Amino acid sequence: MTAIVQEGDPALRKVAAEVPLGEIESAAIKKVIADMRRTLSSAKDGVGLAAPQIGVPLRIFIVSEKMFEPDFAEEQTRWENAPETGHLVFINPVLARVSKKLVTMEEGCLSTRHRFGIIERAAKATVTAYDETGKKFTRSASGLLAEIFQHEIDHLNGILFVDKARDVREVKPEHRHAKS
Ligand code: ZN
Image (tube, rainbow, N blue to C red; front, side, top):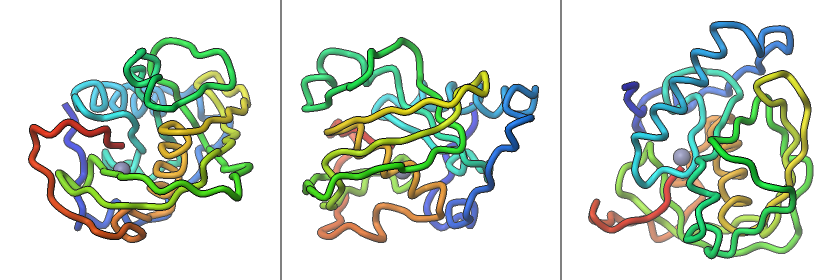
């Protein structure tokens, strides 16, 4: 399994590079995505993962298939497009639109183990990105999924939630919280 890069590692502070469109279906990119899927699947409390978190400086993030489970759906997340199954892959994602309305939420990160803080995020966010076959798509979301979009795109720009959060504190590992 690929280890998740932790705060302090310079890999988390680089601005990640776009994947050239002609390389999306290459073996190298397929391997990166497969590594990301395996790594996220093995992080029990993980709901999202960005490529820099496995040390790869490319603009790719994935959202866990857990997000489709009813207990996560109840967590005020609303899909505006029909959900699929399996981890969702976003290549070269762009935050196309965010709501003016902000929400205050508690956030954590797989790269800042056990630390949580209070952060303001846009209540709704729309992302355009390419899927694994190189097809462009758009997804809008609110709630936890909108938060994940913003958190992961921050990762691609070398930003960690602790840079923006207040009241950052340690939470015992057994306390189950979604992280990305
Ligand atoms: Zn994170």
